[in-house]
Length: 154
Image (cartoon, rainbow, N blue to C red; front, side):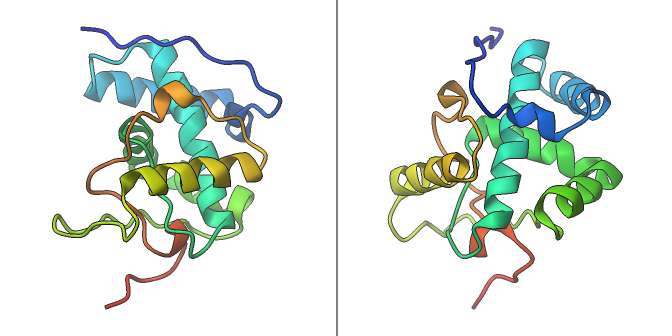
């Protein structure tokens, strides 16, 4: 089974946050690690990943989480540390840490509320949301303190 989705047209295109070379490199990583995802969808995932990271860094304390597909993009991006660190500094102004939750942790208001809060934050930050990539939040990668440079409390 191959996952292929059409790309929506929006006013603020998240892939413009990255160079075409970085986008292509990350999309190749996704299609290599996830052969069920085609290149066009991988490129869309990278765009939504960039929008998510940018919005997360601008919304500290909002308890945002990527979708399962956006988390695939985030994992690919984090592996490319030079590109990732440059992006975070340029777009957000500081490093955005990927802080997964423990298996027994849940969001206080549930996954649907977290999804809606995340999509609202991305839209408020001025980025187009590709709804087809936001089916469900990632099970174990919900971020603490708005996915910014803040340790998990506890």
